[in-house]
Image (cartoon, rainbow, N blue to C red):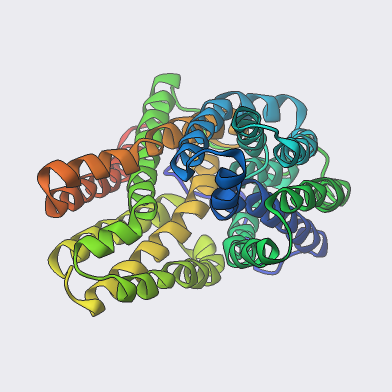
Length: 408
């Protein structure tokens, strides 16, 4: 097996083909709707829903956390189904299921029914969010998928920017149940047609695509690489989940309240900025190098918040690096498995990696909170630094193995 990122196809023009642009934009629009209606809206409607259903907000978020864990387990199956039937077909079915789940949420007569709806929404998301879109693009045309993945993450990065304020605005005008009805309709009437448009405009039929192939390595070597890559992505997602799930409490614990809240807004723009540059990075830097760069940024961010935690400038640099790392990481999650293992079985491998990394990440906020409560904020942050360094070493090991082992 060649080093991850070694190209087997001739160097291509940096320009997108017309159909490529259309497909990525249509798919990006569907992804924005899926993320906004199935994931980001939950945090916004939780307060109104808990009051109406006579439960606490903590109960709603506990159910949401279990639903996310269920989505992580479903990812193990989703990848195999996408390989077998095609990601486009499974995305269409999941978009209907997501819309139906939002409809159930809208008519939920008690908290248990609402919890079932949350599970339905998150199980559907296993077939709709980033990894599903990555499989769609690779199945469509693997040879051009890397730059399309980078552009897709740039487009979808605006989902939270759009849906957090939009949902908040809608709640001032209508009830949370009506918001769920509208968002359910968006999945069926907007996201589903966009997925169908992207599938219909795919210029390359499944099974006939330009393939990205890698020389065959012994199955044991591939398995070891898959395990190491899964560990690396699980560690990075664990760190991101701990920081993002506890960001405001973390900043408050180090003496930054309102100032910290304003500085934390740098995270989103930082992701967008790095993705703007990532389109050129994907042609000049191999996926494994890009992944290591993302992990180095994450490690640097964890050290900066430990060493300069009481400096507003230090926190600003931390937030920027965290955003840069997260933006690159979302691209690498799609491009590195493709580069390392090729197109065959891509959905299955991506589903396996996603299942483990999301399962691990679901415990991160609790783990961080426990360490902080019993041992202090410094040790809690240091534990995340160890995880970030571990992820860097994991991907560095994959790079070393790819260059040292003969016949790979």
